[in-house]
Length: 607
Image (spheres, rainbow, N blue to C red):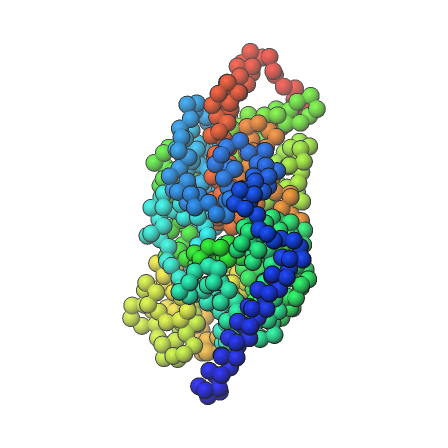
């Protein structure tokens, strides 16, 4: 096309987009009237509504800190980052000996707060490195290997607070342009471009209405559906909109989206890639609550859709500063030391009432603790929980949660894959191209035309440890269950073939190195109806606690979700530590009874 025809086409698309915006607004007004949403509640009424909502979920939480992480206010609470940055804000008068099973992000965050509250903390990790699902390590040749592709959304307030606390936020994160880019077959780009002089919600509305990723008719239907969504209601009545989102957990996003005008084309070309990136499942199989939660944040917070990525590997940029923080406070981290058993007492009904410690390592060494935190993922907690714990519905419900498999593929080339405009620059790996100076797209990328949900050139986005002098792109892509069963060799071959399809000019480049990491059970499957099965951090066993991104918190299974759960479990333990009925007092009582022989359990009462 000529420049003139391209301008006409762009003007036409923008006209359709903004026309759809007007229709969507009218639809929203009609929708609100039909459901008698007007007049909107007063501020006092909204507060009463929110208190009522929180009261249905907060009864099992003792601490104010944990309560602040749930309910509608948690999405608008600007103090969450400061809380994570400043620590628990109190030191217990009683000192507990606490064992944490799992040294992922949730476990390490919990250990930070518990150590700062004055407790003696020891951690046990199955793997030879920390990080859980955010782990990274080096192979024999010095290549940094990862499980997954880790992107930091601007709404990761708790995680950013932790990173500020350890001094890694300003030093180790690289801010990306405020645009979400879709790469389509043949090198055609689409985008949600949030760069706009006016912030949310206007920046988000114009991004959806002007996106090149959708055809005009799909853009129209997309705007119509979003205009009748809880997201729009939340702009005027946040509590009402968020309550609607919570009620949609039993419905798939596709079902919700197509009910009132959303098109299949919108799902296929834009929403499916986003769903795969969030939970590694498509819109037909992901909860509407899951999808709308993140877009609710995008709508009300300008910074929520801003992306950052680490300058290098998760181990260096995220975990090492936390480890240093913990070691300065006397926390011991035992790597390669799995928990083999949770030793506990049973009551007369054979229900567990108290944990006395854990057995760890190959020799099953017994380690006594006043309290134990199982900071594990879904497969980890299923493996370590004794059968007797399933007599409580909270623990039994965990077995209703499933997980999705992923394969993380790293492929290095002898040129710059995402550079499509300058062939000479694409082939040139000479000179210093560190610190993001290499050509190409320096951002997270999505695609509707590949089997990997999201990908990036880490030599560009995270050059600190992924750029190598004289070499080119390091594409890191995450394949979901559609490709998981294939051999590693086939996955690499398919990855290169699909990269070539998205970036046709990359066919001139050669693969110089590759690696595949398969994780059979990664995130818990965010399918409809799962939210009710997620357990709280405090459990029916008085001194046994849970943490992990799958546990109950109002965000997704993610780094932010893991951080939230770690802060919440620490707050719950700190709130229970002191007093005549506190964890410390109960631990002393149990030890005294054991010494006196008054409560020697029978063999059947020990697990």
